[in-house]
Length: 638
Ligand SMILES: Cc1cc2nc3c(=O)[nH]c(=O)nc-3n(C[C@H](O)[C@H](O)[C@H](O)COP(=O)(O)OP(=O)(O)OC[C@H]3O[C@@H](n4cnc5c(N)ncnc54)[C@H](O)[C@@H]3O)c2cc1C
Image (cartoon, rainbow, N blue to C red; front, side, top):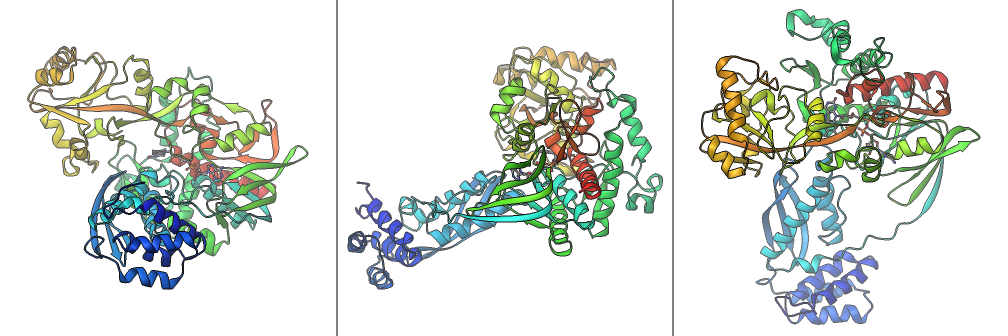
């Protein structure tokens, strides 16, 4: 028997509540039972419920309300705080008549779209069920758990016992089967799936998009939402030279690939760039489509690689998504079904002719279609696949999104598709090792050096982080530090750097260690080689000579105390290999022949840059460009 403030067996009362909830009287019964919990006489209420096998009635609630002891479980508005994915969230919980009457997240820094889904859904789930441990929102577990914790604390502050609100059992699903017909069924509503759906609908095709998460957009909301698009109508209107220095023409962009980005020693080296060229042409057209329906873009032209971003970073991504999904749904009639993972492809002879998807509400969708597009993203979140293809990366924290489990790739393989470039590794960001916050651009704003767990340097800090990963992987240690001084620290604030980046949070998350000087820092972190490493760097800077690893960003010596070290880690997030396609998005067998009715675009195909011999860089550009290409191909063939 569990002890509570009132000495009542609250687990019994919750059992009674559960039974009454199942009988469809959850809210009413909850009021009675919880009020009952708060005073000795309430025990009768619980017992009566048990006696009646949980069939509570409104009268019972009123009866027990009358004996509630408000000084123990006090009605009121409770403000609590919990640590979430992106810092603290503030939650308001209203307790009334012994019930959780309202929950609202007042302010938070959670991600748009994904974190936001939990911010919207969790309060409603808790209030409707009167349970705190309701199911988390898929993909937003940390935000969901933070909201649950804040409500638990509020219940405690109200004099209640949060355990009385635990024990949620999801209602049994009503199973049903639905048959649907369409021209094209799309697996995944990331940017690749959405762009394909857009093009197909414009071509007069009937399209259904199945998305396994409760929200659309795939990775877009968790990226910087910037992509490369040359010669769009915006750029043509303004003229690149006059307005945005360095904003490339299409040819200049392609020349960058020819002048080193495609690597001659890559097994896929192809200077004709059959994959990269159509990507840039298509992303220009796709961006123009967005501009024409009202997506606003701003050039982030002072970035090293000038890019177009819809609005400002993730907020822009949210607006961009809202505009696109509204347009697809209401103007073009595209049917997007969320929380409905595709589980199977349907074959007719050697052709793919549909799919099966399982809705979270118990509906099984049996879809018959002329073609299927796999646009379900990558596989880096799938530990088994990572073990099989990229075991070396598993020593780091994988930062792939939770939906990137490779289902589309596996389904393609099941019907005969070949995989390509599976040995080409996984691309990685840098992140704070404690907070896991991505800090890939720290070397632009906060010049420093990176050392391993011994304090030794091993890589050029100026290398693009994606290339640097190779050297990180070769190190024995998994501990790495970004070391910098006070002058560099001043670049971490948005006003201190031209990229408007803010990395100051790292000083509060436990990622950073501070010391008066670098001797102290070395001692504090037990980095025996750090002093020698920094002495060598400083000597090069002082003499104006090349440093051993080629850190071209570091122009001043690292000497001004305090000194700082941020514990960093590579966080692999996107695999370069995937389903083999041709540049028109037909999924291919090992011999290059296309599988009838099967197309693929976006991360499910790995990196198309890699297909021409370049290292993966611009996944959004690929998803948007190749989504459009897939739509065009299917529009013409289906
Ligand atoms: C953390 C992070 C940061 C990034 N930053 C950048 C950046 O700044 N710039 C850039 O260019 N690129 C960036 N990328 C890469 C880029 O976001 C992706 O390459 C691109 O968005 C992939 O789009 P996609 O549509 O192919 O796949 P996704 O966006 O992954 O979408 C796939 C969709 O398919 C759904 N799905 C999966 N399985 C099923 C199933 N069984 N049934 C139905 N639906 C399913 C998923 O839920 C998801 O919504 C980043 C990626 C990550 C992870």
